[in-house]
Image (cartoon, rainbow, N blue to C red):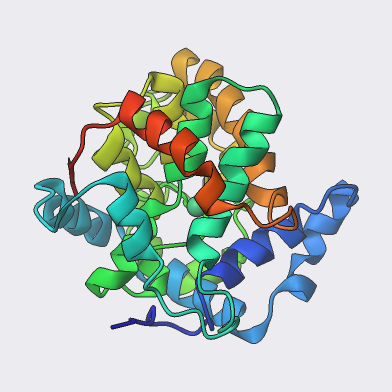
Length: 283
Ligand code: FE
Ligand code: FE
């Protein structure tokens, strides 16, 4: 049975497409301000929900709910096949769209001559989207991530939508630092809940630190693309964000690449998966 992701977008990929259009190679920096033109009504409504509903309390509740990782016990391959059961209304002919994005990303990283841990990170980076299949709405799975419990940066897209977030009326959460200490390190900062934090938690015991950063912060565009929230980062974060920045173009711009021949690539990826991950992981 195929399951749709509940929300205003025809598919969660519309968010990914919006981000890559926002950061289209060669676009002038100032065009970032015109991103609204690239957002269709579904994407805009998606951000309205995401910004209104991702509160600190919500994030803490989701971390508690998913922290025990008792939703499933699956291999990486099983998770890829499971994610592919997500309905994509916008592209009914592309049955392998989810796996394809993962393999296009990992293949582009491989072609770029990067280390095997980064290829592995590319292969699994969006597997956290299985949250959709456990009933999480689009606004709690995808979207640019941002810190909760402190003031919202104007470098986040559609910042005006935060007016509808109850946290914006809590003065404790609306100072620059909010509930955090200066340069406390991102590990102590709660970001909006979604597929990044979830896949980080599922895989962190098996991947080196740079890969953990890539998975956990790949949607934190305000920080890795716009330079916001430096006052929450420590030196380790700054060093590791180089890897997040190295990874990001492969995620954003590999979509147009040739369709990967999943069958021919299977032996390579079976070896790669076995090198980093146990036969089954807790999700
Ligand atoms: Fe992603
Ligand atoms: Fe991706």
